[in-house]
Length: 128
Image (cartoon, rainbow, N blue to C red; front, top):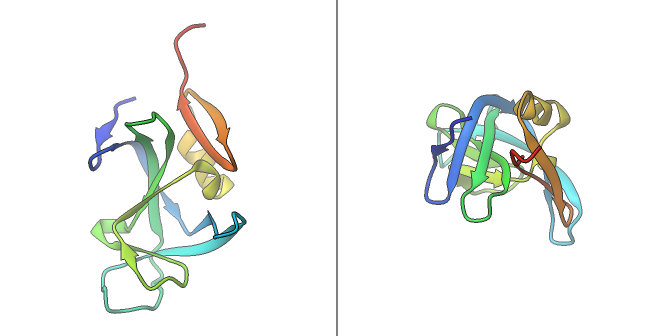
């Protein structure tokens, strides 16, 4: 598996998968499902029909593997009812739907672990 640099502290690998919703914690720690789409216009607050895309991502500081969700074809990511747009969002694996998560982790050699309520992965050591 070859990791490619994506920003300062994140590396990415794998194929892109469509992401239509994310489960993100609110201020109380309860997970809520938010719709995510790609938008190209920063002034428009409505959703588009184009889904966002996600791929496996590794935090280079701590070695945690989650997913990075971004807009398709260089677009911005719009999350739920929030008015701001962003280029990408690093999320834990349990924020993704089961189908997307299984597609990203298919045929990969990872150990899954929980950190609080958040599910991450780490590279499996070769000590077998």
